[in-house]
Structures are given as structure tokens and as C-alpha cells.
Image 1 (cartoon, rainbow, N blue to C red):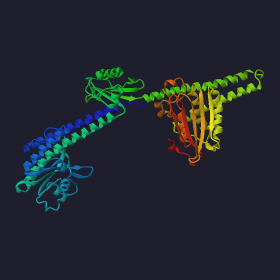
Image 2 (cartoon, one colour; image 1 turned 135 degrees about the vertical axis):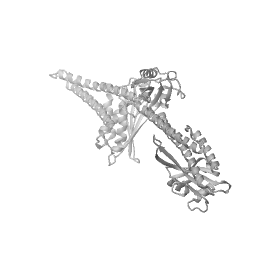
Image 3 (cartoon, helix red, strand yellow; image 1 turned 30 degrees about the vertical axis):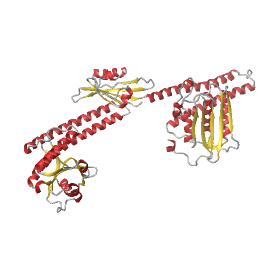
Image 4 (cartoon, one colour; image 1 turned 120 degrees about the vertical axis):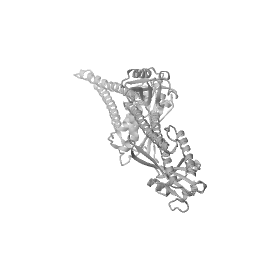
Length: 573
């Protein structure tokens, strides 16, 4: 059984908290820089941290309007670097541009005045766009530029002593077309350089916020889509996180976040486990198996304490894993061991009983020759039955382990082989009529005798076993020269198979669970083995047609000849 690791989700929480703390520290430094800028420019556009996309946009809108007014320009715009394409891209908001038109403005970071300013980190003035060779014509057409002042947008990182330790250029800021026929000059460069630092500070805040916000969304999406149920409760008993899997497992409503877990969760075992963890305040993991309203489902639950910066408990994290299938397989394996033990004991008891009887007749006086021969035949028959059972279990074990079974392909008379199977099964079919219906002139078929023996024995014995009221069991054999294959059908008049059981019929440890099938012994591995032997080793096909309550018809095909190249491990898998 795979153990859940609640510490993983706890580590995700701790990582995000650390990132938020680092973000807050960086924002405080940015705010200090903005206060310094305010003293120089009188503009207070970025002294509060950006906390939402709307605030980011509104702050920049105010900034571009003020820049355009101060610089007396008709237009103002940002071009920010797209790291994926290496382009400088028009980014809202802007002054004098519509957003839809702005987003279509893109220029390589190696071209034009924008690229020059971005690469060098130095401002540049275009006095006349028609005469400056460094101007890109497409940019002029898109912006209707006559003249231009462009400065870099630079983010400066400072240490605790407020010393600059790193500079990063994230884009450029353009003001275009000086009003009243004027031209941009050195004073404009100084002023726009200062204002661009304000703009870069705002963008830096926003980018930091968006970066952490994106990581939060990623972790939340991961938790929400996880097949493991995840539930977090704070020390005030409020639910702070419950993903879709947990809501399904605990049959909770979608709007449980913020509610008291004691009212939102109906399962007493879960409530008691969380209460115990909250009360203990210890780093303790408790593992429980919980049967919810649907008794067929079981969940493994583990709890762990979530701690804050000072090590104080701030909540409990519970992780749930659906172990229904694991439990079902475990139960089937337990049942399999019990059944196999019983099945092995039956022929062994018969063998031992008849041998003991013969040994007690030391002088061979009690039984005549014919009676002794009958005893020997029974012993031989039970020994063969025992051998078939052991062979079946060994082959299933090998297939589960991914091992390739050895094959011995020879030419065989299939109807004759079926006749032997019928003769072997006849003593166990006291209420049944076993019929072989084979076409005339059937060709000999190439197959592994032991494997097909297991296939036929399983299908015929199942037909008898699942027809408790008797009836006809018919084995029909036909051939198709066009497709060069034979078709074998094993039909009974028994219980049939419920529609919901059909999709899983050939899976290992699967047994039909319906009122009519109760009490019928079986291991749940026979049809799994049959399918593997037919399809993986004989290049055939097997399927079933059944009407519940009206019998079943198992059908398989075999080619006349096996391919010369044996199937490799990839095909087996």
C-alpha cells in the first residue's frame, strides 16, 4: 500500500509563505525608493504596494497621463520585454493609444531606437522620424510618430545598506510627438528618466505580485486536481482548503471553505481525528481507514500539524487516499488463498484416500483387478486435476511478474483435444449434457497444447459451474479459410453475466458479484489467464456474449499457424 505524504502539501504551504515574505521585503524597498523619488518630482504614484491587477492598471494609467502632461507629449507608451520571443511589446495602459492597437506593436529588442535604448540603457531622442536612420518604419507607421523621446525601464535591486547590487532592464518608455511643434531636449531626458524609475518601480511591484500569485494558482490547481484528498483546518476550526477529491470523499458541499469543519464534515472518524490533532499540537501522523456512506469505498487518512514561522501550530493538514481497489484486491487474494487451499485439498484427499485403501489391502484380496483399475483411474484423474490447478496459479504468477511463458507450438487436432477435455469434465457434470459440435474437415491447428488445455478446461468448467441447474454445455468449432483461423464457442444455459460486470470480466481477481453467483467458488484469475494465453501467446482474440439469466457464450479464435517470429516482451506487456 502506497503511503500518503502530507508533509509534501505542508512544504508547499511553507514555500509559498516564504515567497510572500520575500516579496513583502522587496516591496518595502521599492516603496522607500518611491518616497525618495517623490521628494525629487513631487509625484506620488507608487508609494503603496500593488495588491491586485486592477490596482496595477489604475496606478500605471495615472502615471502615463501625468508623464504625457509633464513632458507635453501627445502619446505615452510602454514596451516591455517578452522573454519567450525576444521582442519589445506594447503593453497597456498607454496614453493616446487604444489597447487593441497597442498590443499589436512589437519590435525586436535588437532593432530600432527601442532596441538601442533597451540594449544600452541610455535614453535617445528622435528629432525627426523621417530623417533618423535608426527608426523602424513599421514602428513609425503604427505609432504615427513625428518625434520621440525613449528611456529605459530599469529595476534596481538594493542591499540592506541601500546600495545598488543589480540592475535589470525590463523594457522602454516612449513619449511621442511634442505638443505645439516643440522638440524634446536634455531637460525632458532628465525628467523622464526620473519618472521612468517610478514606472519601473510600479511594474516591479506588479511583476513580483503576479509571479507569486501565479505560483499560488499553480499550487492551488495542483491540490485541487490531485487524486489525493487534501483538507486543511486552522486552529480556529475553520476549513482553509478542501480540494475536489476530499469534497467527493467526504460528501461535502463546494462552498465549505471558511466553514467550521465540525459542521461541514459529517464523518465522525474524520472529525475526531482532526480534533485530536488540533488538541495535541504535536507533529503526529495518524493513519486511519475510513468507510464512508458507501460501504464499498475505503480511504486512508493521515494528519499532520502545520506550523508557523515561530514553530507554533497554525492548523492541521489531512490527506486522504482512496484504497478501495487495494483493499478489494487484498480481500480477493485472501479469498484466493482460501479457495486454492480448499481446491487443492479436495484432489489431495481423494488421492490419499484411495492410496490408503489400496495399501490396507496388503494381500490384494479385498478388491478385484477392475476395481483396482478404477481406483487407479480416479487417482490419476485427481492428480491431473491437481496439476492443472498448480499450473494455472504458476502461470498467473509468472504473467503478473512480467515473465514470458515458455511455449511449445505443435500441430494438433483441436476437436480431438476438446473430446479429451469433455471426458475429463464429465464426472463433474452430473446434471449437464456436454456436446461437441465440430465442422467436418477441420484443418490441424498450431498451438501450445498445455496452454490451450488450460483455456478449454477453464471455459468448460466455468460453463458447468455457473449452470447450477444443469442444462446443455455446447462446444462449437468452425473454421474460416479466408481469415485462416478457427472459431471456438463454449455456450451454456446458466446464470449469465450482469451488464455491469462485463467490462471487468477478464481482469485478474475479478469475480461476478450478483445474488445468483453467491456461494459459487472461484479464484478470479481463470479468465485473466485465458485472455493472456489466447491473445498474448496465440495471436487470437477472446470475448463473451451474455444475457443475464439466460446463459453465456465465450468465443475465441486461433490462427491456423503461429507467426514465425515469437512475440517479444513489448508485445507481451
